[in-house]
Length: 498
Image 1: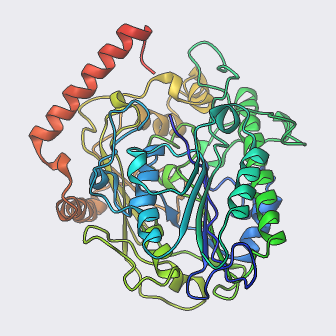
Image 2: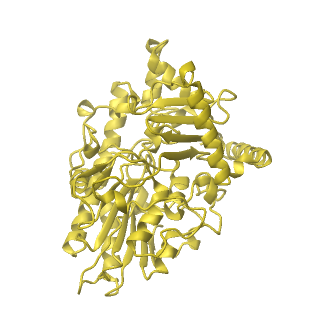
Image 3: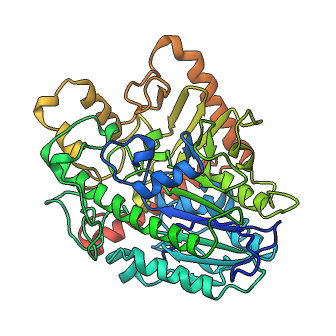
């Protein structure tokens, strides 16, 4: 399995620098965090200790309404590097088992930048296939001991130093730094029988000051509290702190190499929300919101906060526009917009609606969902909602789910919220301005009947416009049969589903 780290996108114009670039071709850096939503101090999280990312937010532009296309690693990353939605690029679920791969003819971001004279590199977690179709001059993505088990952020940064050392003078670069924190796993086992994998609390002495369970407030959208949940979330926030250290030291490397000014565009975001109930592997806004921040000195207003609906399909045209490309898209299927007009104050012509989806994670999590955000409303269409249960296993949930399952929550509003995770209705409607954690489903209110009908029709139209293959009943049937077969084979071999 290959992983590629989140890279900071740097645009550099530094005469005499080893990474010098012509003024019209700045260096580009994309930094990706793994399974990180807006759990950062700069986004208002009271537990997160993230001084480096908080400083980065003050130096650039922070986007409060940015979303990934799908809350699953591979489908999400596929969108970042193609500018297409998962049902368009073909990587419907996780790529490592070889069953989910992008189509050969998708647009490819590093290839497009190479055609503009960029040297390209990726360090860390990649998690997309076919990897070899993407033109990387440098790819340090296979040392899983360093990347995933040890979470060695300093090793990753050392690889970035080597990349910079080898940079030809006068040539711009595109670098992706893809850190794997705060993803679960890495060898610490599970929280208990039938429970989820642990978040890796400490690795190689980092973080230096991990939060204790006593000082940890659980992730806000979980809506409950317990000692077990505080322990689990303190581990999560420890991994977030280690990520912050890695990114902070990487940004210092840029500064020392004169790559921290107007010659370098840096973008930071997460590939999906945190791996907790109603986060990763769902379609709620709590699963798709990403902590997008952009720094490009001289081209942005430091400290600016934007609330426009932004998607990761916008990254491709943003990079191309910054690189001086004549056209910021290379394929008629791409519908993303360059984010550059949002880096300065003032109104910009922008989209009025934003779409996300979830098809599957591992094959047998197939439970298609499509969503639209329009103004303050967010509608989720669970295609098979009301017909069958969500196929996630209990071990995919966090301690919040186990807490809410206890008898004391019987008949409470929060139990109803968690019950909808297991048994989603066909439609869920939320007023995200009044209810950002998406607790109160308004879809059954008769006053919203026409709104639900209109928004669901718009989802259907968008799926047709973007040629969603799952609109074909035969395709959907064949896909469902295939993933069911894969689950049977996996269970026969491993004694249970993953």
